[in-house]
Amino acid sequence: MTKRVYNFYPGPATLPLPALKKAQEELLDYKGTGMSIMELSHRSKQYDAMHKEASGLVRGLMGIPDDYKILWLQGGASTQFFMVPCNLAVKGKPMEYVNTGAWSKKAIKEAKFYGDVNVVASSEDKNFSYIPKDIKFSNNASYAHITGNNTIFGTEFHTWPNVPKDVPLICDMSSNIMDKVIDVKKFGVIYAGAQKNIGPAGVTLVVVREDLLNIVPENTPTMQKWKIHAEKDSLFNTCPCWAIYMCKLCLEHLKNIGGVPAIEKINRKKAKIIYDIIDDSNGFYKGHATPDSRSLMNITFNLPTPELEAKCVEEGQKRELIGLKGHRSVGGMRASLYNAMTLEGVETLGEFLREFKEENE
Ligand SMILES: *Cc1c(COP(=O)(O)O)cnc(C)c1O
Figure 1 (cartoon, rainbow, N blue to C red):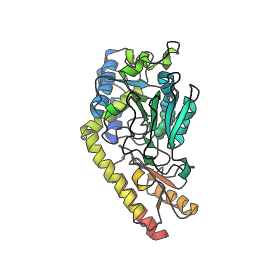
Figure 2 (cartoon, rainbow, N blue to C red):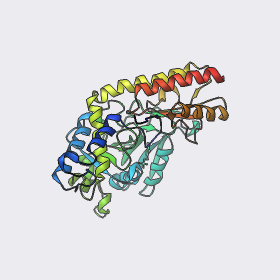
Figure 3 (cartoon, helix red, strand yellow):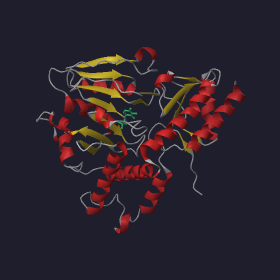
Figure 4 (tube, rainbow, N blue to C red):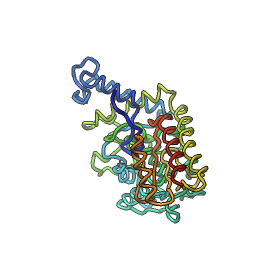
């Protein structure tokens, strides 16, 4: 039997086993073509059918209305940090951001190349341990930008801020896309690097409301215009075929297990297992995020000393619980419980954390 560990890495991250097996099965001969889908022309009818299926799965799983386009782009979510202002900034109207962590900051930095940026709320005062409340965006903003889930700090928006009418809400959902049911109509644009919750690295999903495609200045380089990619169904140039194919297999799996409502239930159950252990540990495990802002996807916590944290990561590794070391800006530990992390994996982690506390407190 092939060895498989429980992989809690923040991204690239664990993928559903049935999707990996299907890819293995189809690797050498994709549907009787005698080729891998990696080797097929992106203009072939076999590729085209798969491409449409992948987009269809995104639309179905997220309940995306017809007046939104689904784009598969390259360059990671980091490229969208400048694509957003490039496509949506209007002269004289500030771009408005909520700063909830490292990824928000990077998005803000890129927007500043395109004009005036207002940071309307921030949780930097408490090392990004919470999601600000009562966020107010201006009526004349070009757009309002939030980071849906803060991968490094372990906080997540559980309700969406109100935006003035005619100000589109833009959300970086790289680490929580499809973790729970959302109303897509509340957003102008949703974007997500695939490698955390829906597939492998190499492709970025962008969901954009059609009317927002026409704001981009004419004298913008072609590849930077969402409009071009929308018109060409993400086939303006060679698309990342393999990454899109892997997303398709992962999303097919998600659909087979009941879609987003079903995975939301499982995600809540998984997160509760670990948060309960933190809360019942008499302070041995100390959660970074305030309870009302806790992420379903990335659970960040510290132990009494850095030595114990290192020991916990190391002993976890011996139990085949991999990738639990926290990001340097929070330290301690982080368990990423993305959609593809099984309940069994989280239960195993829970058992380990309980035992570790008993042996080391
Ligand atoms: C990982 C991550 C990014 C960066 O994604 P890349 O695809 O590496 O550019 C951006 N935003 C969030 C919330 C992330 O978790």
